[in-house]
Amino acid sequence: MTKGISRFIQIIILIILFSLLSIFSLKILHKVGYCVGWLCLKLPNPLKRIVQINIKLCFPERSKEAQDGLLADTLKQTGCTILEYAMYWFWSPEKILALLQMPIRGQRLMDDAILRGKGVILVGAHLGSWEMIPFFLPRHYPTTFLYRVPRLPFLDRFIKRIRARTGAQMVPASPAGIKMFLQALKRGEVVALIADQVPHHNEGGMMAPFFGEPAFTATLVARLAHKTGATVLMGYMERLADAKGFVGHYMTAPANIADSDLEKAATALNQGLAQCILENPTQYQWGYKRFKKRVGLPRVY
Image (cartoon, rainbow, N blue to C red; front, side):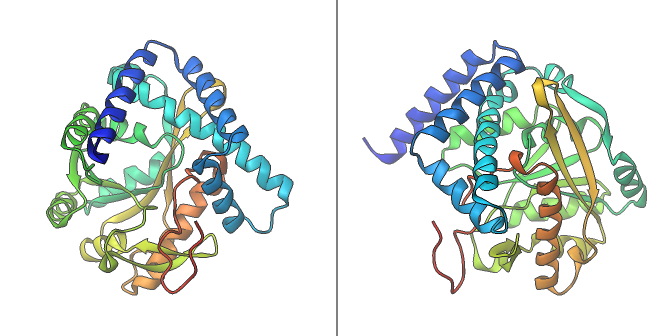
């Protein structure tokens, strides 16, 4: 069996499993997620190893006990993130949005940015329940989302259909997609992207500190903001305890995030992301290999 076919079968099984799990409430989904996280904590697995490495790199000043506590809580939250896909994929948008507490914290920042008329770049990380954002934003503003296209075409179609149910425009992380981003900003609309991923191409990023560690960082936000004069905001969706729903946050971006000096801009971007993450560190996706591309430095994974 080829790798591609094997991956296809795995995804089909996962979709079927989540369709069955979608009959349950958010509270039950989160309880199952905690169990998944507990198993990941107790059993050797790649996810646990990567989370441990990232926590040690990003929080070297913390004691081993504190790092272990963050590891345990992070894995539980990661389990919740995984199980929430049953909700995002198969619940109606109305049922999903009913879980979002209003108003969004920092809503005035978005209102003022929209009134400027030069567009808004909403920058997020893999923090909290980021899949809520494509459901919420298009209900209030014309919104274009940049995303990485999956290798399997059927999965790409599935994801776009799910995320576009409330009117979101999904564009690929490619020159054509970036052109559409620029056009949306010129119309004074909102564009949104997750900015903590390692860029695929060397010309798309540069090294900048992320929690004090060198990390290959995207420069797209700086280039877009510098070219258009759009307002840059940070944003994320926090998962509330006891399955009480979610609350959104808008935050002011660091001043240098649109600097023409891309190194200063990339550093500011990571500072803004870190500011969001430190508000809810257990809800960040520490299982992502954020430091897999370290120009001139030893490998950490």
